[in-house]
Image (tube, rainbow, N blue to C red):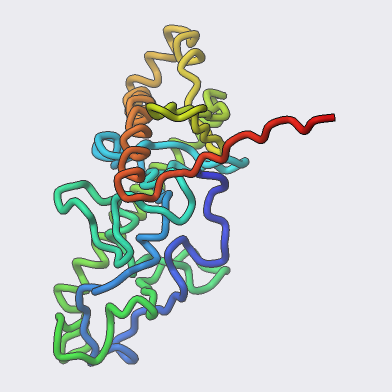
Length: 264
């Protein structure tokens, strides 16, 4: 299941990052990515608090383990298995909500210099979304100014970045409240000799919420934090649905029978 927050040199899903430039990409176009197998092989996607209400209807929302927890939408319970997106990166159900982190790909805002806080629009060149092709929409006009398509991408990335900042503030409040606990979920399929147990993630301790003082609850309610906590708690019931989806896809866990004790 979820273990640690993504902590590699490049963000999750991205193989390379290249800044978008009118000088380099002035004659290129943007097109829909035909295949994104990396998405279909990713089971936990970073989530923003803005999405909690929508995400909770489809996916379990959990928090990664470690000192810097990240909210994650679980699209699978086993690493490398996505029960909602196929091996080409296409949604199995066209009507289901897709996390913004996935919809942003292959673009993102990133710092090009460590000594500057300025963010630049970048993309993953290995995704195949940008190139000198006949298909797609131009990235820049004849004057080298961003096209309407590029402006739309930039606006979405800016909105995502703002939501990410709100999410970071929410996480700080959650950490300070001391409400996080190690998570564990046991699923007992019919006919299975023993339950499948999933660990390696964190969740909100519902008992601690019940024990909060009235003024603390009122403050959380007024800030909107309480609604987010309950969206997370309600979403945990989706774990069984994700488990069932994996079983239907033939990607369910294999239960190894316990060995009989050796005779002495």
